[in-house]
Image (cartoon, rainbow, N blue to C red; front, side, top):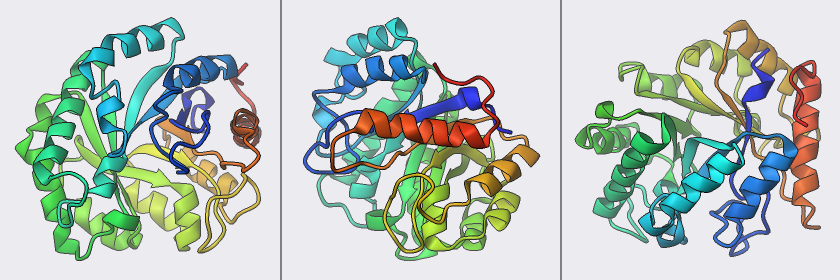
Length: 281
């Protein structure tokens, strides 16, 4: 099985909703989230960078950068991946809130952050608002990173897509496998009706990061175990391919506000399918 010690969670899942969104950078709670993660025994957090809170994010705001480093060091919680929601809100073919140049500037800042923080995976969504209007549009996405010469930094790009696996594979197969890969979101795949065996076989060796969540077919995120995600099959297939990367929990956001308990439930649910080795405290 994948290493259970590689569990992390996506930022915002241990905070009240900000601006009514399911996922956004928790401006007033990011320190509390790091502390709460340490209490759960989770030592990885996938940082969130979005447009609406961009200037208040300590990865982007140099005034808070040292505070972020100190806090993660104190509570031994590492940032190994960054979910780039600002890109989904501002795809290069349809800029809305910020300009394309600003998108490049943000990525450049993240690359600089990787030099201080250590190796990072940028999870770049090409789905929902940033769904590719044509397969050729993908070229404009890759151009951003080529222009930034990201091969000079300790960083990789993991694209998360809503297009059919075979079409997605055709887009990335000729790209540098050391720089460009896949973020596999098993909940989204279940909702799209993708075949787990086809996905794992196609993307074997190119999966840089995994989001663990549950969704019903064509439906929204739900509590682990109540949707269509075949957790056991995915974990078995990943074990067969010797996947050893991150497993990032995207737990359900309950309306009651018990987000700490819900993330703990999601953690235990997934651990139980993996045999329980190296259980979080």
